[in-house]
Image (tube, rainbow, N blue to C red; front, top):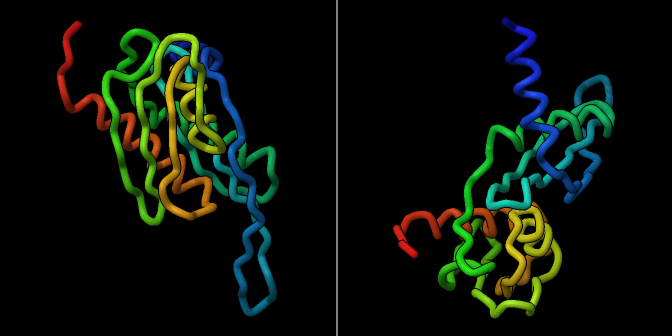
Length: 160
């Protein structure tokens, strides 16, 4: 029975596409010296309306990426996609990052940059405009603000 659940978990992870957003070397200073670790931010999505963000630390980059991928599959949110775009415009702020997302006509594509583009691509939104209003360069905060904005779309029940 354990083997079946393991296969089910693996198949869930396999259907997701992942992209590494940020890799940072972090240190903790102790009495014995500096302890070096790596922090990795990974965005994952199924290109069909589900997307998530995972943050993890480990002693080497490969282990940190694997840990972050596992966290992505636990933190997935669903995004309502209507006529190949989002239903309405939305703005959200997370710490210093403020993101504005706006629906777009068919064929326009993803008009956004950086972390906003990565999150929207992996969510499977083909046409959207995204604007980073704040002046932050922190990719993690921008990705979290984008995810919060996309999650905000679920609060309103819009019927076709």
